[in-house]
Length: 582
Image 1 (cartoon, rainbow, N blue to C red):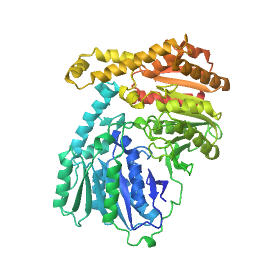
Image 2: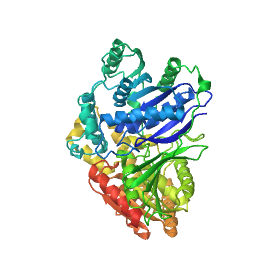
Image 3: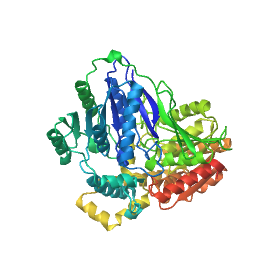
Image 4: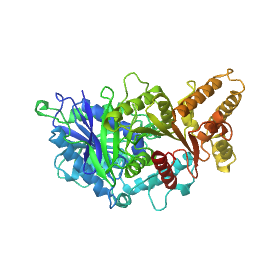
């Protein structure tokens, strides 16, 4: 049976997946991630790949580059060399922890540049796997900027929301040193001193991928070309992303055939000796895993010197938003957790089952959003905290994470406060399609009206770029929902919406009776405001009946809280609420 453990090294956080000792050979595999929006889409993909490789007897280490996700930020900023150094340190850590003699280096997207550099520098690299290789760093930067604008448009944000003079996508800013180095970097095609077996997973729509494979072969390497089928669906967005399991199986088969385990009986893998702990500016973080029967992975962030808020005081718990991993959209939960630690408040950010770094739990549906699974996982996380870091628990979630927090807080008396950000559903309608909700996006009906009067939208409708049927479907769902909710107070037993309203108000009464403080934060114009209006009136006047409920709005922000000023505003709001209840 495989086992995954958190690991920390050289300021980096990662996960070590060990195979059954009886199956392990002499070769380990290091996974070099992509960056930005693509990293968010592929977190689960790399977890599944690590599990598949470990099942074939390969110990695997995957990690976050300095300045990304759970790793530390470097005081002087990061560059391509610091990311390469991190990958080199990952190779050393893997060999030390798993008793490997040699390593294969895998890279995805910009991670292929890191993988290729490591292979050049180390004599113990036995092979190379390049998935969606970046032949030109300059082209990657240009394509990132173009894609960033497409994402902004989808979020309803103008181009000016992008930070000036930076390479940014989805609220994440590429370290300037890395961006500068990428301007003049590509995969090195000069002849190598040794010939390596190389697997290239090429995107069918990107000719330079297969050209990279051809040029590597001309440089003397033993190249196998594999189509990266399912790439576009993998990278669509974190919530819609589909893991290409067939590709993972082919990669695992190639590794088994290319690096056979001839002396597996001699290998003795061992778990890391020390906790997976990192010490940063005003905080310490430790990678944790709990609930052994169905592991959940996360990060426990504590103050370096616990203040009055620690030692049994407030403890924050950050929940997944959609299928965004525990780092959060634009790394928001990482930044918020570290801000809280500097104020003396510990926190846990973790992935619920089948999201990010946490595997699926047997018996759970593949689609876990708005199901009972995340609510159950929150309770299990509090069980873990009761032993590791007990306190007065404050649940923090955005979108579907706010839904999970709301219902987990109602069911678990250990929860003392809820910070609910852009919560799209207070009560989930089991007849509602999550696919339809995702396709419609978090837009209120006013946004549909605004877009339909925009000449650009009209041109796109005429050209067929936007589906007229899809727009009409979105509008009809909004109108039907609003009408049904409006009738619910008058005819409470007429439809399911009357039952939803009764259930929602009962939950609010129970939470208010317990003294649970509830703070809503909604982006101006977000559908979450419309959701509250459906249950509590046009001006949300019904919320005033509850002593411990408040509603705040966030200007100049989208549903995901993407612009940098809005991110800072949200983090400050979270810190003030958790620390002071206001």
